[in-house]
Amino acid sequence: MISIGISCFYHDSSVCLVKDGKVLLAVEEERFSGIKHDSSFPDKSINWIIKEFKYSFEEIDEICFYENPLIKTHRIVSTCLSNFQIIDAFKFAVKGIEQYIKLKRKLRWLFSSAKIKFNSHHDSHIAYSYLTSQFQNAAVLSVDGVGEWETTVLAKAEGNDWEKLKSTKFPHSLGMFYSTFTAFLGFKPNEGEYKVMGLAPYGNPKTYIHKFRDIIYPSEKGIFKLNMKMFDYHKSDEVMFTSELSKHLGLLPRLPNEELKQEHKDLAASVQFIYEMYFFRLLKELHKQTKCDNLVLGGGCAYNGTANGKISKKTGFKNVWIPSAPSDSGSAIGACLISHYRGRNKIRLNNTNPYLGPQFSNEYIGGLLKYFNNKLTYKKLSDEEIIDLVSTEISNGKVVAWFEGRLELGARALGHRSIFADPKNPEMKNRINKIVKKREGFRPFAPMVKETKTSTYFEWDKEVPYMNQIVGVRKQFRDKLPAITHIDGSARIQTLKNDIETKRVYTLLDKLEEKNGFPIVLNTSFNVKDQTMIMDPQTAINTFLEIGLDTLVLENYVIRKK
Ligand SMILES: [Fe+2]
Image 1 (cartoon, rainbow, N blue to C red):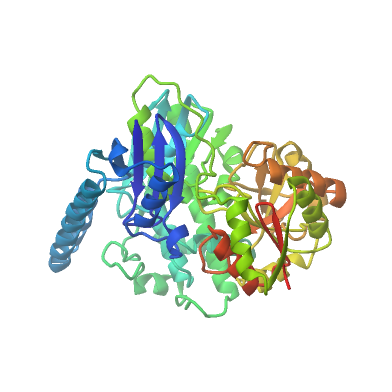
Image 2: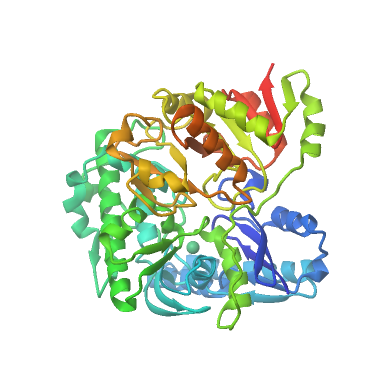
């Protein structure tokens, strides 16, 4: 049974290929198109996925779509009608139905013999998160902007199935709440939320916290409501908040290039504080209802690592699983896993591997490098030689771009398209921010650490394989690891196991421990500000030539500028 999963038309379009319940490939369309959070139909990803395993379009048995476009259109039209936006209701009804017909026609045309299955948005989130976990039972929270109607779903999973316990409906949404303030603070919604999270520790939540009593409030058990006088996202495609919000806060919305003042930092701190308050309220209710030790998180809000890092302290959950792409891109996988597993008495295959995208051979890279002979010097080395050389360079303060194996799925670089640097170097944060990443100076950098050594350096003793939990750096190491320690003493860790896909980087951490004293490396995604993560060697080389990186590793090639 060969299934293709598709997620598109909202944000983070993606495609995956699943064979007999095993996820073989997955990629976000933005990695091909270069458009951040690309929402278009993923033609490029589909073509790649078909070619990669030399399948023909006719061999695909089923197409699993991540949500139900007709129910989504119903929500959009109903919301317009309830706001007396009759013309908009008509416009969106026509647009939604047209898009649905076009989608079905296109899928039928591409995959002539495949069955087309539409799933619910939150079931796809839940399926991706739960069915890729190792748990046989779990409480599941899917917390998101919006699906068809639902914005948050609380569920209980057992075996290969789950039942919904409770949900909140649009427009009341924790994801939309966070995105609205992301827009208010001058960042791009659905993209800049992690900037708000990074800014929060610089502010004092007390400045604005009392104002939030009139913005969001608790309703029935665990659930919340937003004061819709302050928000406009349910009426408009372009504006997320009303002038009422600005008046109520006594603060003007920040323009994208405006200086970040203390009041903006204080607002970010309040937003994060309030988000956490309602997030933990939901989790406490979920724990009460399920009486389960295991928690699985899905939906876009599951990227909020600051909140996630406090789950075991603030709630009764002991074990937490958050996959690498909990936002809509992972839902393509979720939609396929529903078809293979939900309600079926099948043994679940291990689908935790996030390295599912394109890969490039040494032969391909060698051929490509010949075109850059006038600008680059390069040599092909063994894994052992590369690890020895790169660990020395990192220890000597060099910044190294590292490209190997299949591209990661999800927003974080997990060691296959990464920039590595010395976590001990106090200058490194500024250097990478200014020269390499060309991004805002307040944003922290993350450490990658050998899993067995996590609790030595961090106030944490569990695995965090996909950087979705922010934890404390042990006090005695905060000054020693300044490049990865945020202003509040926290770090967004990635714990690394010695697996097939991570063996080379794990060995690099071993060598760093030997040479540098710490089995830790500063790890940030290989891309520059406002660009998508690098997918292919050609873009890697072009970026290397443009920015202030010292060394580029492409598989077994070590490359320097002339
Ligand atoms: Fe979603």
